[in-house]
Image (cartoon, rainbow over all chains, first blue to last red; front, top):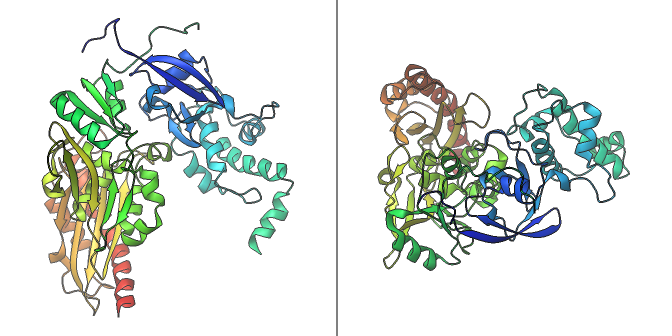
Length: 182
Length: 304
């Protein structure tokens, strides 16, 4: 086949951040490009476009997936969450967003959406009140590249995000940590 | 809606079909022959498309087919993994871990969580990348691939015959790998998996999957190892000669590593030279074998 104007188009209902919108795309439209170009959700950033950098990571049914390694036609029937969908509808930042601000965990911000979605999903694996070690944090963000920060503040932000979740749950980290050991 | 930018598509044009049943997929693949390419997790195929290193006529997306996502522990202890089981699912599967701990040990080294959430174990094996972890595990456990074709009985191809070369398997036109079967662990055996990559989650410069078997006196009776990234296909080598008859607690694992280094013929690339990879074979073998031996030893004591 050759690239041609007559390329077949597929209707797809994309459910992103709780809203379903119909788009019409060729089969080769990557999910990352559909989000950015068809839905104009430009929060998802596109870095390497072959699955290495992690900048385009979105949540598919709650788990992190590279949106550059999935076609938009494959997304029908799945719930997509992008960085735009992390904050509450009342505008309250997601704990990981607040933690990134608190810890200066971003500089240029290009890789940030991928980190935020990846960490947001990982936090769901921890009960509020527990803590996340630096080693665990490094494992969580091991698939995302950042060329500015040297990762130190990103690792700190993972722990901080868990603290914020704990606080929002009405627990204090210390009490919770003690409770965990008893 | 206003479009930002132009067409914005890296992959070349291809036809696309998402059949809803295995029969439909096989009929389609059969009709397409060499023009058809199966899309499962896509974590290897989509980068190849985006870099335009491959340009299949039509992708047959199997993700909508029910019944392909099961992990089954067979009575003999082997583990059958369906074509749509994601690496992350195999990693988390407790019965599979209990039957064959090596599966989890290797799967945890497959790329990153986001890749493991989408990529499939079966697809990784069908991709036949000699740098892949699961290709080596299939080879080491003496596993096989279940291949379906329209209008014919399924055929079961042993790992030793499945891999033909780098990114080349014996899968023919019209065929679909519907599951892979990892062979059962022997009684009184233990396993270990180690790999070394430039960055965590990258393809390994070298990796070693090893199995040690002992007898009731905890004397080493068998040592086998499979290596990644050291040849065109997953290389399985018998290292028993180096340590046979030695007690599991004091065996000369270094000698087994040195033997392994003489058996492999790695190519060099910009990540690691041939000589360096050969050294890694020796070192990773020497490090992995005591871990496997400790497990074999404790299994043996449980059996006694």
